[in-house]
Length: 337
Image (cartoon, rainbow, N blue to C red; front, side, top):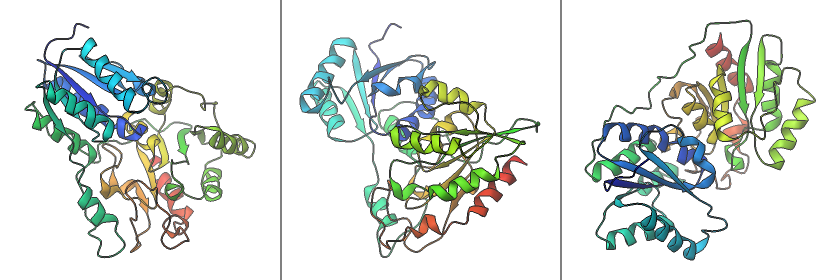
């Protein structure tokens, strides 16, 4: 692909879920702005998310090795100016690493814009007392605002309404994916209860697919395999591209507030998501997922965290422990029946 002088640098690092949410935004922004080429700067391991997007070049960097620390940030900047004719910078992350790169391009007289994260309103949503519990702008909307600041055509038809539904005709079996893990424990439904949920569907009418990564999660899944009969395949070592292909064949995904919720959304699969310390109102709900499929306990202490990385104030993790597993089963059965 020949990169034109009108090249927009888009920056987004960090978690897989946050990066996955850039995909529908970039697909739309690239399509609506044919006069520009785009370069996405992100973690090297996320390249598969952006395959097949015309006029988008993925520039991956290894932040843990070659491009680690402040020296690594400077190396990234010189990589970019030597490889691309950057005219505009869209910072969708707003952290120290992207601040430095954005400022350096600003000093080169490039047009730049940065995401507004809404920290004050997120704090009001999650504080202990006098919470203001209301839906905040979805992360995709915050991403779109950055491109709007830069003067690009922004089509606001991106939505987070219930547009994903089961479209496959009812067959002899239904394929359900279960992703019981999350980066932080306060976002996880108790594993012993989740296993009971899966046991309910461990019968001839269903095929079960388990998703996890890392040694600890793989150990749990391998243990569950010895207790279940309808688990299909071994997808623990799949690439992101392979996972997306597998997910697209499923009828339904059951997840936490996790990256797998966002991957399933990209695969256009309906998701039953289980929420504890976090809340869909913070703006990280699965793209185009139906909010009615979010299972959560209405407690005065919820939500206590935007990202789920805080210790439970009550000490009993009630937001997850008080969710009746039969409610999860009923929601799954309603959607796939």
